[in-house]
Length: 215
Image (cartoon, rainbow, N blue to C red; front, top):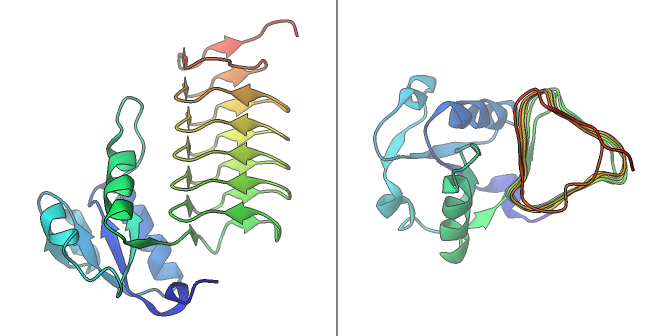
């Protein structure tokens, strides 16, 4: 464990709805939140978290004294979360992974820096979660899944065993990917979709669409 993970205050980059969920996670972990960065003050201040200014302020903070977490979610078509992570990483800031205490994460699971595992989610044995991933509220990732950099597993989504997601895949709420499926980078899987075959190139699976082909 990096020594930063036990003693440094945390800067939240972003101040919207996802940032509020991240702030609650940090409070549950008894971590000191230095404040948040956004283009303007938001309702995050109502949680007692200090507004520090925009990214011009954030990028000038002492990178040796704080940890950073991204308080912006991943919406299909938007690369804002990815750009913010890259900007602060390039500037030399340290990122941690944060795991909500109400989640269930097997002891051998790898959760890389910058990733967030939210309340009630389950990640089973043998799985690997890459950098800057969001495993959102109540999502299920079963055994031996590989989730690459920048993916977002939305609330209630389910990855059955040995699923492999390439980078920047968005899995919508209540979507299901059955076992041993590979999904290409930059794919968006809409809410409620059921994926039963490999997706070999970047695709958009419409909400509630059921994708079934013979294998």
